[in-house]
Image (cartoon, one colour):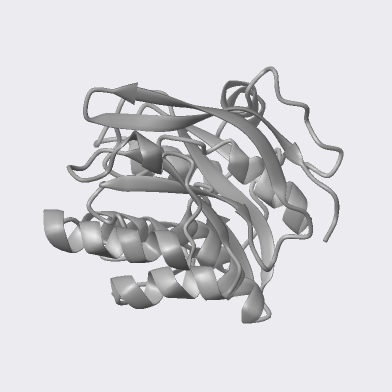
Length: 251
């Protein structure tokens, strides 16, 4: 099975990529949508350039895609890229921070290779999954959502137990303060997060947009991502802004 993985650099898409490798499937590329606008109903906004480093660490090509984040067009922009109809070079230039070094391992695709399926990390968003499923049907490939309806606690515990280095990249929920930005999700922090989720009634896995994550290392990556970041806090929400990132030594 030849697959592309829709990769935001967050915990769910990274887990889905690992799931695909564990199935023995051939990952032809990671596909990352860079949203140029201020919001998106479909895609993660923060830290998505790290998916390029994840691809380099995995030894697979990267296909960046630009989107304005508008509801009417954001799936069509992904569809065009999968069909080889997008300007990949421009997408790379606008997706890759100009002060980051481009690793030798990073292969930027001109066109998406022929694949049998698209793997996505959708958890419970019918909005996202329905649109991805319909797009895949239009272009004649299979849509896989291996995490669909996974229990929040089980999913988050699995990330920790399997060695994912997932960091909180943004927060926008009552109960989550600036101290959470950049914090690694481990057993201790997950216990604290579970307590806060119960108290403030937000989703433990962040599925409601309460927080976003980026993954700096995972079992299917050969080298970790090393980065310098600063916390930017604005009233009741904030982001962990990665100022520089590169691949570390092989593990």
